[in-house]
Length: 597
Ligand SMILES: CC(C)=CCC/C(C)=C/CC/C(C)=C/CC/C(C)=C/[C@@H]1[C@@H](COP(=O)(O)OP(=O)(O)O)[C@]1(C)CC/C=C(\C)CC/C=C(\C)CCC=C(C)C
Image 1: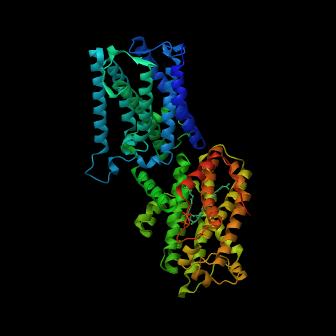
Image 2: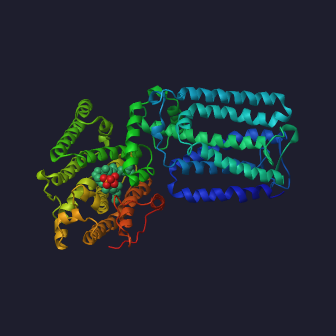
Image 3: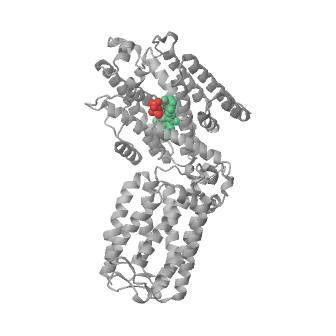
């Protein structure tokens, strides 16, 4: 009896497991746990017969003083535990690296190819299949030869069929995703295990029989077979996770194929999804989502980061909602004249009328194609109106109408924001409404819902929180808005400091304007402090993501309030690392901001 192998775990496998768990813990979802348990079970069940055979045939041996002596089908328990911890560590690394990935947009097929000179996905799939078939053949060939090719033959003939199956099911994700989701989570743990193995074989913790190995080395101390074994097992783990994510993406992206996709689909649902022929995919929807997520990434760093913390169909619908709001807002903001802006608002009104009319769907496409620029049509046509209350969408247009006053004929500055009440009304229309719409989507996509009266109170709190975010938005953009001839600071506030709108337009970074910025931010944080607790009444799974959306934006306000912060030209932004830290903290639990009110 000995402790060598147990110490290998303690020294090399536990530390990364602990570090990865601590790092990812706040972001861990029920789906991740499900994937992990699923994969660990398969890894253990699929490896035990193979490993047991290897040990009984003396391909692998363990010296008595290296293992404690407890065995399962002749396999030392330390070895069984290795399959668990390897799957655990590689999976956690994959979870971390793939967290920002929006898998729906990688469901691209040959029909969506933009460059006709690149090799088609189907051809690449076939090349992969042929390669893996050759690997399997080589494995069995080596086995039949026996002797020094036995161990390599056992590895290839055992792993080859699993890899071929996973490749065939998940080739889309394997081929389309960036290497941060594929090669890196395979390569990093493989290299690490190669180092551990080099060390362990040197120490003789486990020994490979000279009669069954090739005696080829990847480097001094690392047998070729061992190197291939670790590489292939990590490939299988990552391919398994990719197959899982591929299936989830199909279930979530195509509601017409899977109208009632469950949050945690069973193995049968997963396989059914993977077996859907790609020609049945709604390619148009994949394009719509690609367009929407690109818009989100380009236009809002805070909400783009926050969107990664939402899951499944809720994430998809939030991205579609953002896309609509952004397009609508930009149409009005970029209009050359009050007339043009007015006509966009009028068209958006008609768009909503038709979208919410009982049999409006057929007319909608024609109307959008006739009235709106081609680049914006997808965003309008895919607003998930079936889940959204219509009142906030109309109210949002009223908010945009308030902006029209800035475009008054004759270029006279005409202020829509006379008093603090007007300011709140504006915030309520352009942002309180957005919060209500986001909450609508939450209530649609989660079954464990609070009671009716609680839902109303959550919506009210959300609405207020939207106003808080809008105040931060205004505080951030005083100079940007001034550049467009707009002043959202209430007239009454300006009067108190003997300022005029013209003075703000001329010097938006002046000291007195700075005082008003602080006043705006104080108001925003007072509302935030009052309403933030209501997030804890939302379904458990969305609390962290909702906190992330709110906190990422409030962090902009925090940055502006920081002592000594100098307002620079352009939009004030929070550095990327800081934003990630804010999101991580928000996902960990309710934050305790030190709010000065
Ligand atoms: C995670 C995710 C993808 C969320 C999407 C949220 C969403 C749909 C945002 C719409 C944004 C938008 C373009 C609206 C048009 C009107 C407007 C400009 C509103 C201002 C947003 C600023 O966005 P951005 O910085 O991209 O715009 P500019 O570059 O400045 O033009 C607003 C500040 C409003 C944003 C308000 C919300 C997202 C609501 C927040 C409240 C909640 C999520 C509810 C919290 C719940 C409780 C119970 C407290």
